Image 1 (cartoon, one colour):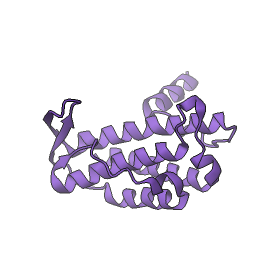
Image 2 (image 1 turned 30 degrees about the horizontal axis):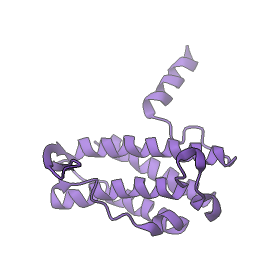
Image 3 (image 1 turned 120 degrees about the vertical axis):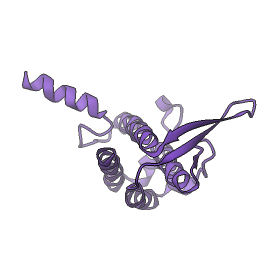
Length: 166
């Protein structure tokens, strides 16, 4: 489990570093090719999913849909970066049983048995997915993302390394 924690910490640090290299106009600009979503909205979503896991650890019940949706994360680069660093300090926990709460469109609630390690892995993969969208958005804006592995799945990185070695 320490590997998953390290990987998620690395990704959160990568997001925080990226935020230091872009300006607030690009962070808040609706991108037509992305359904008018902003980089800030993707960062907010990513942070809030991780916050849901941290909060769910305490209560033993995770509900990713019932998030705060803090608009300040979407507009403040400094605040979003601060939250990334805060999450890094909060995710290193021991595994334990948790309950995932899902609600369908009719309002019916389902409880799914899970555990922290499984949900941590979900948050890691979800974070990488949104990092890929952030990278795409920045490329649409003609902004350079210097880290070629930003938003790339670990399995893809490993596959590339193996392919180059052959």
